[in-house]
Length: 121
Image (cartoon, rainbow, N blue to C red; front, side):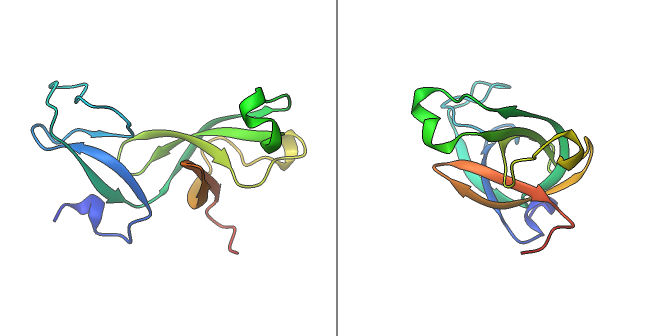
């Protein structure tokens, strides 16, 4: 078993059975070797916050969710993933700083929710 699977699994991503590349998906072909042999693997949902933005006026499809914060997290397994912050920051000072350690705290409709790792619920 590989090291990315040694911690408790939190999140499912894709791994190419041909070349081993990890990818957040969804997709039908590996972007590296174009193999159709993609398999789901579980990885820990921990990483570092790369960026975030507040969506105050969401598109119609997500109107009921607004406002919400979209976040980009570099997972420890080497995959960059887009999700949402579990808590919507009131202002810049209330937001986690870039580089903050984040953990998967849940999900809704296929969208992962991230919270600062130090925060416990």
